Length: 330
Image (cartoon, rainbow, N blue to C red; front, side):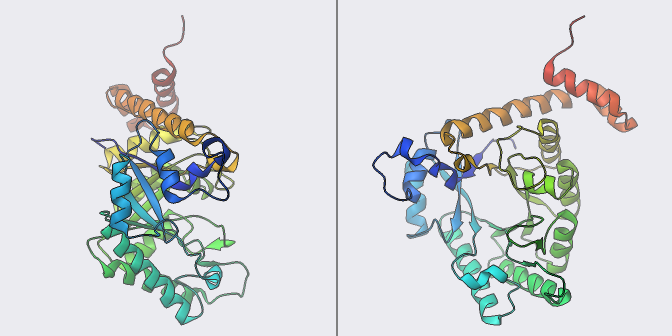
């Protein structure tokens, strides 16, 4: 994280479209949303959904974004083009549909590479089940591993990152948490495979974000960090630090210690309630910078290392609160 890069969810910039495009009928285009995102002070990158956002030659789209001052951090797969994907992409019971999902992912990887990126995020939210006796779990799992392995082997120089999530749209996701995802990565056995940590997903998987990051660094690697916040019941997509400031700071400390050097990506949903997406993104960037300043000061405080060594929670909290809020008045 020596050179800070900030990326964001492009669809956020469709929020409150009348304020930006009073004459617009329908949804804004990819380039319209990107031009709005380019107004954000401090934003360096965008992530693009595939195939949703790639309606032209990827290298040409990348050049247009570069003219706006934005780079492409990576692509993220979306499996909506075929209604049959609703009951599975890599795990669909129909072999032809599974093949379509895998081939679509390979095409997405090729597009990402043509756009100058070497990161593909796969969120396999459709791969799961909703009812007892709906699926042969062993077969479902094997299809998932086979699909992941095949897309990784398609281009070994492209990083493939699994973004796990407990549920939605399926009642039970096949890759719901850190441990299960790490097991899948171990079985797939591909050197270019890793994990994207989405803060809100981790929370409602009932995990401590920094602990999840530490386990991933131990057994694989963190390839993406999606910051947002929520109340740990669903994917709220709230602004960074809105609910779990301390856990966010601890996560930033952990990934810095583990050598993460990718972009910090904001997977927030200002469009859900019509917030100003430019202002929202700017505040997220400033929040992360302030939090990283707290991390710097904590790392220089030998008292914290001692408290952690003793597992002295009271002293650690006192040091953290003093660093965040200042010394109390005497």
